[in-house]
Amino acid sequence: MAKSNTATLETEETRPIGLLEGVVRRFVRNPVGMVGLVFITILVIAAVFGPIIAPYNPTAMVAFDARFAPPTLEHPFGLDELGRDQFSRILHGARVSLQVGVISVTLATLIGTTLGMIAGYGNRIVDEVIMRSMDVLFAFPTILLAIAVMAILGRGVTNAMIAIGVVYIPIFARIARGEVLTVKNEEFVEAARALGASDAAILWRHILPNILAPIIVEISLSLSFAILAEAALSFFNLGTQPPDPSWGRMLSEGRAYINQSAWMGIFPGLAIMFTVMGFNFLGDGLRDSLDPKQNR
Amino acid sequence: MNYQYILQRLILAVVVVLGVTFAVFSIVQLVPGDPARVILGVQANEENVAAMHERMGLNRPFFEQYFSWLGGVVRGDFGTSLITSQSVSDQIAARLPATLQLAFASLFIGLAIAFPLGIISAMYPRSPIDLFASLISQIGVSIPDFWMGILLILLFSLSLGWLPPSGYTPINEDFGDWLAHIILPAMTAGLISGSIQTRFIRSAMLEVLGESYIRTAYAKGLSRNVVISRHALRNAMITIVTIIGLQMTALFSAVVVVEIVFTWPGLGDLSLEAVLDRDYPLLQGTVLTLAVIVTFINLLVDIIYFFLDPRIEYA
Image 1 (cartoon, rainbow over the protein chains, first blue to last red):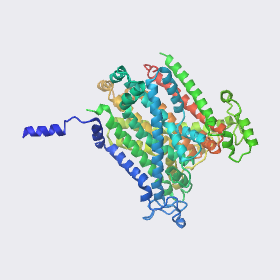
Image 2 (cartoon, one colour):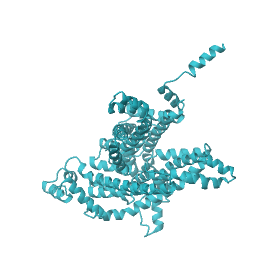
Image 3 (cartoon, rainbow over the protein chains, first blue to last red):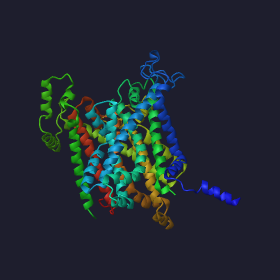
């Protein structure tokens, strides 16, 4: 009996677990990360199924006579200055936020990580040129840099994605460079080099997989900043253009009527705050789960 | 002391500022198509476009334009506004004090919140005050600064009627009125930067409080206040100063946003006006000034860091 108990314990508790399985296990046990995951799941559902779930057309003036109406069962977030349903507009706004966040952060990750890896792996001159260029980008207050890029490209949501992407390139470059510097002299890299692997192959196949953890964490945290930046640009009338709904734009419009209807300035703000909080929690949870110091 | 570190930081700052001038100058050159047509609109006639080329110096080769502009910048001449024909330098000089006042007031409010909250929560980890501090900082990190501004206006201006919702009075004209106008914008940027700094101060203090020299200080019979102020805080300051320095870019970013929300007549508000009017010389002047201020503050932080921890070397 005792023997069979031991066998059960060995298979369930002490059998070696894979890297990914370990990360998932730790993440599931992390309450902060799980709360973040729930928030983000709600956001993704709203973004994907928004047009189906939304009770009204977000740009239609469904009740012009009842403009500024407070929240009711029919219109849970009330009506705006043109009698449009705020709840439907917020659901559609989720799509804009997620789209801008994902595309701009993907841009920043791809360019920033590549530059950082080249800087960390290349010679001193390459490193200096790339990293001093990143220092130049770092010298600008983030939103000001985004505004300056918008001045070049012009208004609109696509240009906002590019502007936000440019702002976050140096962050990924710095992280990737730092990680490459710690990994590039490891034995497995020396071994790959001794076997005749090219620099590109070493970077892609051997170094990249070993520096992914902090980059994944940064992706989650940057998504929250990107969503804040899009909201700010739309608030300044540079991002999403009317009549398309976006949370930042809704706040900008709501600000003018805040005396008549405070909720016009509250619900879009709450949507931004919970989304940003979701990505921050997710990032914190991922950091704890991916931290090699916790690997046993 | 190894002053080579300071020299290297100075050289680096000069390189960064030169890079910033190049990036800022390139704003006009990177505009897709003809910048003169973009500024004047599609219906502009050839004569006007040619005059704009002449006015902006777009006829000359790129580097000739850059060095001529840079020469002007070094002498404090940023050119003239395309909209008002006023000197950009004069406009910047008129707006700079408002931005600096707001930045320092926000930093002051942020630190006044972050230091006590960060230290106390590190002294009593997992206590109710620690949980409260972490909740506040989590909200502060997640809340959009412009929304925070709207909420504060809603509460303190529209509901309670205590403070004006926007506007500015120069400090030398009426101090009381200046104070009444700066409180809400400074609180907006200060609460957000303070909540981020609380996190860093807490973790820096927690790390130091776990060190063996703190246990030794307690073992010597020193009181908790003496241990915290003379031993823990002094050592944690190295990390804290670095973090505050890194936060300056974020603080100025918040100041830009807050200026726009509260129509505070600073450089952030002026930058947005310039973008909306496609007034490129004005935009170049405001962006360059703010980026140089941030670089200068970062250099200052590096130097303070060096004096706080003489072991530091250039890496």
